[in-house]
Image 1: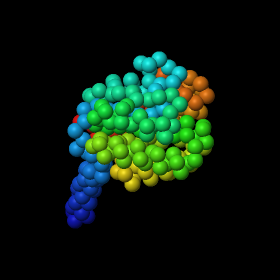
Image 2: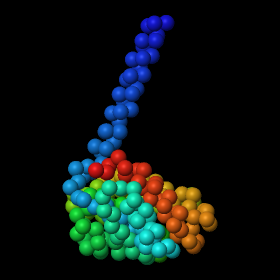
Image 3: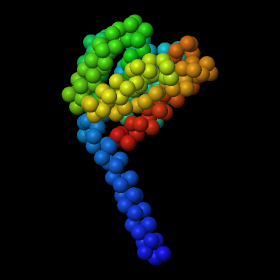
Image 4: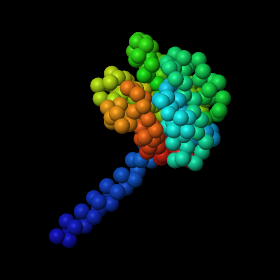
Length: 207
């Protein structure tokens, strides 16, 4: 019994060491963990802009209350990934960001932009931000069957570029009328949930 108990304790300690080690490894796999930027830029379309609510009720405003660094809302209603590339320098990189939260795809979907173009544009956005020295978080705005074809490719982009991946930020919101201001856009409660979901994922990478 004593021998078995000793083995159990040893295995338990080894498991604890592994669990403590793995998070550290995961962090090192994210590009630009040594980012020298001082702000978080939320780069996206109407979901980032905060369509349907007052400016102070957008998700970037909610995120400001959760982090210890400035948060800039660089969301534009109706933006596609192609349009986002055009304003990347002026609206994002000029701020010398520490972390950029990228949220695009909804307007590409609505405007029937070829899926391959969306994926390539998003990948270029991520790489250009990383080349400037900032970390990137790629958000997945698919919810259930809606835009589900975007989910795996977005995750793959994050894996290939060593970006942070934030899954299903719209999950449970798009199907809940009490969380929306219209058919697609969240209300203040919905944007608060999005901010909380983003914060939980990026928290380990914040200063």
